[in-house]
Length: 289
Image (cartoon, rainbow, N blue to C red):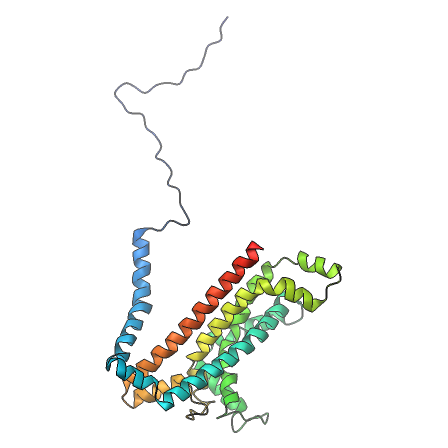
């Protein structure tokens, strides 16, 4: 005896069968044209258009006026001093920022969370407040007997204060994700601490250190608030480019101020681009190896 088979009922003739609509798959790399337009518009309003206006103002007197503004002896002296101080502070941050990040990630001690929170204070604190704090601590009435007001050391201290978090926050995530098995294996084979760091850890940290150092330099080269009081704005000694630009604006030379600003912008862009390309190539070589 044959068993009855179960058949699926068919839809009546003339009535289309209902089908579930095909699921729309979300692609992480897919970009909606409307979203792309909003992003481009927002970046243009905040970044591209102001930079274009700055370029137009700097060239309002023609190319000769632009060159005359940026090649004045006072402008060259101020730009050279600003770049030198920013470069020195960035190198200090590259070393100390890496050490601080290493301690925060690899060591466990009492007060670690407090120290980690203090790193972000320069991001939240208004820079003019930082200048007041530094002046009250290292100014003429210093309670600890250290007088840095009107000195380049005071300017460097102010720049180091506002740029401290950049290298630390760039290196910390890389250290957290770094696999320590290779370090332990090297140590078991007799490698010393410095050798392990130089041959295993540093190649991985280098792109992050370079990125943080570039951001530190870009911030330092245009800093104004933290140095306005402690530096004293002494031409040729402690006057940085941002203070020189303010001086030109107060004198009514807006085109000259814009020209010096464009030079600062070009220097920062060149340094950031160079560091980004270099770190990217080093990372690719490390991955290929």
